[in-house]
Amino acid sequence: ALSGLIGGVLLALARQSGSPVLRAVSWTYTWLFRSVPLIVVLIFLYNFSALYKTLSLGIPFGPAFVTFDESKLATDMTVAVIGLGLNEAAYAAEVVRGGLLSVDQSQHEAAAALGLPKGYQFTRIVLPQALRSITPNYVNQLIGLVKSTSLVFYVSLLDLFGSVQTMGSTYPGDIVPLLLVATVWYLILTSAVSVVQFYVERYFARGATRTLPPTPLQKARAALAAFRTRLRGEAAV
Image (cartoon, rainbow, N blue to C red; front, side):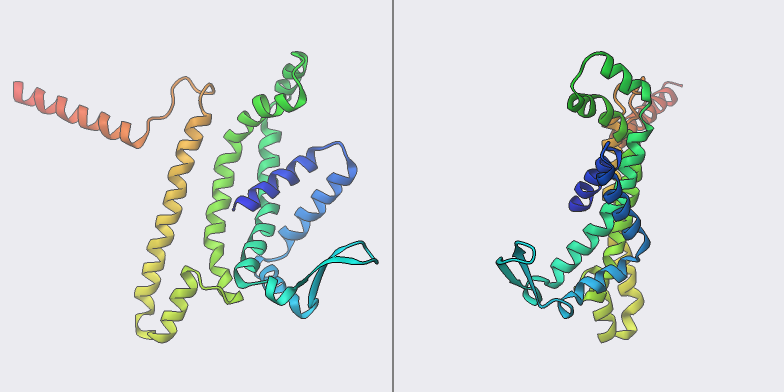
């Protein structure tokens, strides 16, 4: 997820840059990995060693400085991380780009009129406002990534779904309870991500709303206080 987010930010910035080369590279990458199914990417990387036995770093058409055995380099975990990261970066790029475009042009003009450096304009003016739009969309994409990890089972890596499949083949009569256990774990993971999303959105809502939305703990305290007040009123009567 982290590699995908970093790659997505870089691709989004490249897409927004003034360089036609960077824009073309970013657009091509996004188009390619959004067009190819994730399972195809994973299986391609998993079987990449059948195409190239070794990978070398050096001068093109010249001497190689370092040579790697691709079959040893591309472990199941490496293939899963690279495949998921490459795919996630393409989708994250569009999420980040959409967030940057959501910032009103007047904000850019006001920051430029104040004579602020471009880096300061981006980090202190544009990005905080864009994150309010980026956060819910990217968390939605992140939850999809969590569920997409079930596909790594097809490249011989046992994740939660892969463990259920393996145990289900051993104990076929228990496949439904095993799937229910997997469902509970997926619910726990996605709920944890949603909780983080709430607090991140609340943090970036400062200055954009008059009052911040109450946290679940604050809601519980308010409900408890209202309940106590009602009990005291009934006791007084």
